Image 1 (tube, rainbow, N blue to C red):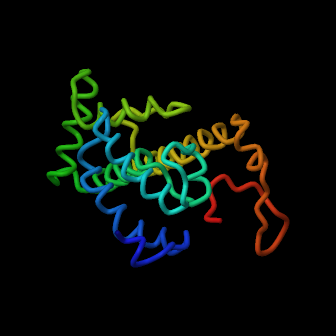
Image 2: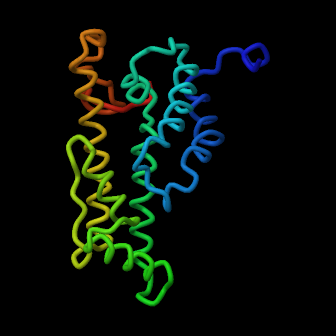
Image 3: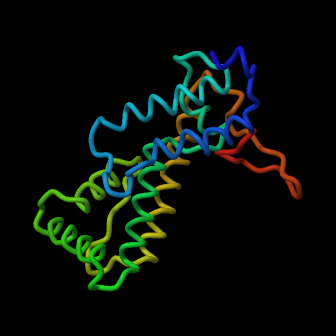
Length: 193
């Protein structure tokens, strides 16, 4: 077993390992395959096991502290943001580029209420807490995609904050202020501590 060879890995170094060796496998293909079903649950399980092991937590420990204390986003959100970045890339392409033509076809299918990449993206965005709305095909541009990405991050931070603040088990984390290098302490929802 690796623990006998390596010993405990500090969180900062463990997160470097996660970013370099685990995250690429968990995010592979997320630009073209939006996570609409339960398939992403196996990826979430891998991420959660790695993060719990890094912190030395029980397999049944709460999930929110994993993400808030290590400053890592749940894989479902990370894959969604990468898909939005692909959307921004596709929108930046020339109107005759194959990627742009495929995107236009996908949005045409969405307007006809037919399944496709854009329909999957809309479905996933609407199931966030709070929901995020995908603009219509005629008005969507790279700026709006950047705003969508900000809305997804805001949704994630709100969800994690609500989970932490509503749990009596995490009372030490309620309204926790993080010291800043300069200036007064401030509330940081996600921060590598």
